[in-house]
Image 1 (spheres, helix red, strand yellow):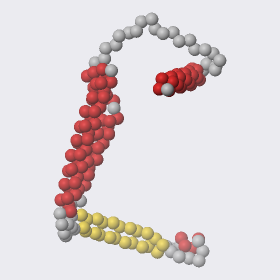
Image 2: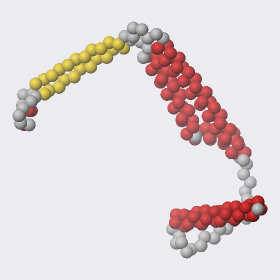
Image 3: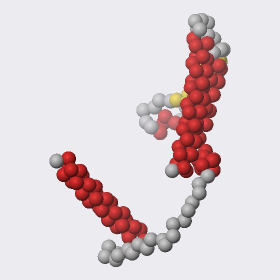
Image 4: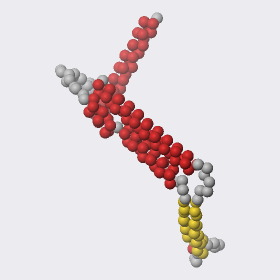
Length: 171
């Protein structure tokens, strides 16, 4: 029974592979502009060239061209920004805003725009943390931990990328 099951699975695999080949061939014909009835003749090369791949060159190109490196840099920049925000949000702050507007009411729409009444407003605010009970220090420490985590994750992702590229070249 196991042999029959293995045979059925092998036949199903062959049928699936044939279907994939036919689908790929139809896509190639469509891409190069052949009709569905024209046959494609495959001519295998007479000699197979030997290719030697330098794993270190593969690693170099992987590091230069991988989006993983951009993500590592983005994470590092984001962590530095959060660290700066935590430091700067831990002190005094001030804000000034001014608004100016006009308004008018009238029984008809056209009259509402005649002689509008000015409305002016100036707001000045000062923020001063009186008691944070160590909250600011905790925010800075959390940002430092986040920065350390981003650096460690970046280092691990870079090493994994190097390893993947090296083994892909060797394979």
